[in-house]
Length: 491
View 1 (cartoon, rainbow, N blue to C red):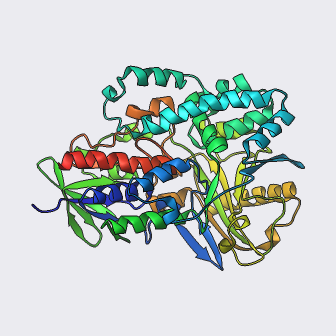
View 2 (view 1 turned 90 degrees about the vertical axis):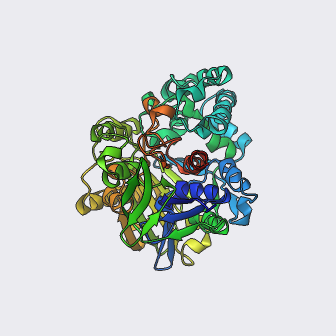
View 3 (view 1 turned 90 degrees about the horizontal axis):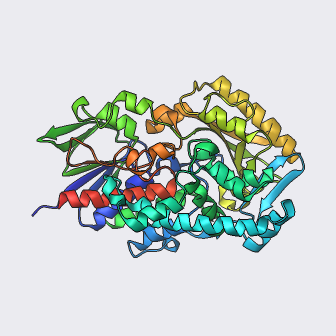
């Protein structure tokens, strides 16, 4: 009997995860990728001695990465070295008003207590609930394919889901425990990228606070792309073939199945296909109309997570008053969230994030210099032009210099910007989004776009626009979940 073949379209976290899982089950797997390297949004580039991770920069939920590699009898340490950051990150509230979040929990509790009396005990209580949500959510719910409501008809699971406060908001949940505005901002910050205001985000996502505070913030030496390099190495060890610079143009069909994947350069015969590229683009542009899962109006009515305006900067001196991760909350958190989610526009006075990976990793920049990554969360589907980018560069750099009391602009020797148009060009990203589909109640589990095509029995989807959702750990899990469904179909 011949070995059955699977083509995975897209070499991001989800695509590599799916490919490796299928290859380990004995299938012939090829990954076709439109770009020149693996990684998707987690690609890297080098310029003038600086090495930049292009997208993800936070290593949270280390247990998910551990579980992934352990499923292949490997460990993360076989591929990269992890460092727990201390402080986890810096938060800047204004001029000479900043705090460093220590990785040590007792020190963190002391910090909370210094800001609000009684809050250290409240933090214990908050995190006890958050841990429960994390254990149920990450260990049980996210590994379900969400193809049927019956997957969730389990008395214990239903009780768990009620306890996880799916119908309560993170806004009200946080305020049950904390009153001081600084502490509220700290606890709400992880949901800024989930795709809705705190008032519309389920309290379930306090599990992100558990990931942040208890599991910690880590960094793989050499950069986030080291994870991709490790995953590709493992995939190739399992027999996966990666084919780069190979954008997919169409599919061939027969008797309710996909029988071929047609690219610019080749044609691949298949027994099954996994679309690990942008779901909307694949659904609307690659598939023939009669095989699409959803209508154009369906997609237009989805709530998207934010896009990003990013600046990659090479600075020819060492910088003061900045840690590896830095959050600038010196402006109105609520207004910025509204200008992303409620009234989409370029933000008036945005919050922003700065990563200086060279504080931890000396290979990221030449000696005596800094690698600086500046990110502004913005609404998707905005008019993106060079003039607007430059306007925000000037605005952000002026605030950054004022808040850190140093000249940075005159020392920038390399600069590159990246926003909506680049996300569309590089990833066919729907509306130029950076983070996928928003994690709202109406877009959770079976209410997300399905991981299986409704009309073609051997076509599946994985990644941040389907279950379990956006982010690096969920994408890893998404690939594993879809691989199980493909394997069932192929048997």
